[in-house]
Length: 298
View (cartoon, rainbow, N blue to C red):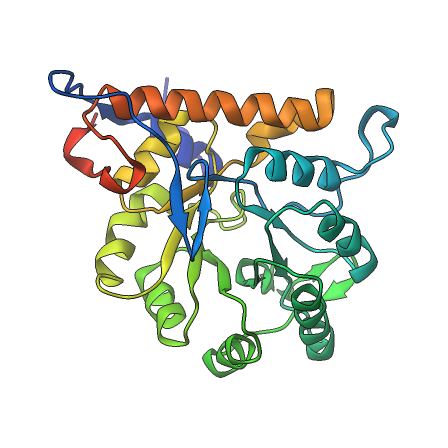
């Protein structure tokens, strides 16, 4: 067979992730525990939900998928994320009691950006942030569900950070350059992501993680990674390459659609169990201990 070009960043990401292998270190190891401290709070594992938007009610159930996975996040004691929605929809997320980060789109209507961020803070959000990887579309600035997006400058992002007492997250970082800019303006966390392959030939988040980690050495900023995270081994690799946590995404959708809250809980618990197993088999007792010493590139 001849060579076929493949620009789908999701396929490129999956191949790269699967090329990373794990060696065992069993003697003197212990049963690992998965809890983490993250931005002043404690969570049961370094696994987080994705910032989904516009999920309706699955299989005739009363609550939307967004509400269901938020309830699961609360019961699992993991950090929850939600994406594009109006304030009345965010009310329902806040009512679940989940520790939630609201990720706001880079709307051209700057007043809407600030209103949604302020509203989340008033409703007790854990953090707020912006989805910078939806700034551009093929026609110029992106249009999402009829809403026009806008270019975001360093000064604009800094003004959002300075407008809130909450930790600020920047989602869609895929380079050391943007990571450093995020740290410079006072963001408390970045999400390393190519947003399910919006950019053709986008570098896999795990491939660029070590460079980002090195560029942020000594800086007070957390690193989360998403795109293609579907198992405990995936989370383990992400942490070994420099992340503080990883977010499952489309991998949890079949469980969410089929079984709602319990489906998400069972899926995430499975990820946690495999993460613990990988840690125990490689000599790492806690997530903060994990490094790349047990990784091999195939």
